[in-house]
Each structure stands twice: as structure tokens, then as C-alpha cells.
Length: 212
Image (cartoon, rainbow, N blue to C red; front, top):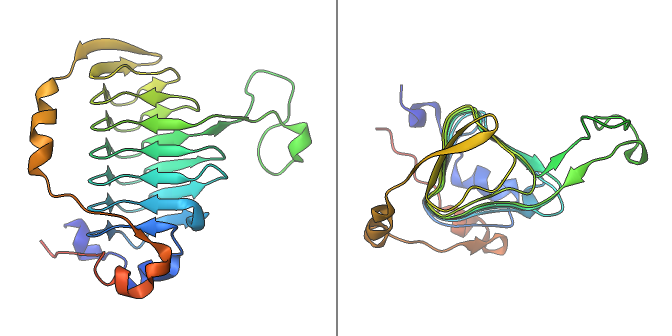
């Protein structure tokens, strides 16, 4: 059954989410959870599939235009997460801009006082046309370069060069992606972001859930 048969957020529902800004033609499944919505910005032609979670810390989360988050994607952490235009995250990808200390003597998890933990935070950036395979994990401080591709079930704790194809745990380069994808970018319609102050009138033009 197509995603749209389960229902996207209506314009009124989207306007009540309280996003910092959003563009046109958004298809956001109604099971998607936003935390820290006032620090989340969405571009145009964005699709976020069922059961995804976006939890923005002080650095915020920004999705560019023509971005797709597949089923069960998780983005969370205190630092910035910036996902540029034409990026795609496959099912169950996790992007972290913060991580507990897994090897030292600090306590872990948010139920204990912050001074007893040793949380490391750093910005994460996915540059244009990056694509991330299913169930991969992106760690704090990582930049995925323009056009880079990460294979499924990969652990990414270091930068990935532009147009590199990487896979594994830890990732290693296994190929190079075709640069010609950049030539097709101009054929795709663009759209601009709207500020949250544009309110329900903007939202009325920002969601298009087709039953196809």
C-alpha cells in the first residue's frame, strides 16, 4: 500500500508543529515525531516517511530541498545536523550529533545528572546528493561529501570524500560515484523555504499528499 494511503500531515497539522521554517510540497507522514521543532527547518519537496524521529538540540536540524527520509530514520543530538539538497537516507538510518562516552568512567543516558556524563557533540553535514544506505549509523563530527554514497549497514565515524562509495564497519572506500548526476540537477524544479511566521496560509501550499 502506498505511503500516502496512510495519510500525510494536513496543512493545519503541519502549521501547528511549530517548525522554524518550511518550503513547498512537503509530504510528512503523520507518525513522524518532531522534538525541538522550533529548531528544525525543512526545504521544499521534502518527504519524511513513517516512524521517523527528528530531535533537534541547540544546533538545530536543517533539511534542504528534494530530501527523502525513509521509514524509521532517526536524527538526534545537541549539535547541528545539516542535510543538503537532493540527499536520501534509507530505512532505519541513524544520524547522531551527540554521543555518550562508551569507554571511559562516565555515567551514560539522560536519566543521570549531566555533570556525571561525558557527552561529545559535534556537527554533522551531508552535502548535496549524498545517499545513505539502510541501517547505517552516522556519528558526531562527520561530513559526507557531495555525491558520496554509503552502503547499507555501515558505521561512519570519519569524513567521506566527495563522490566516494564507502561501506563497512568501519567504512572503507570501495568505488567512485559517477559525477554526471550533477548535470541532471538543473532539470529539477526548485522551491524556497517559508518562515514559521507565514502561518497556516503557507502550510496550505506546502503539503501535497497524492493517493498514487
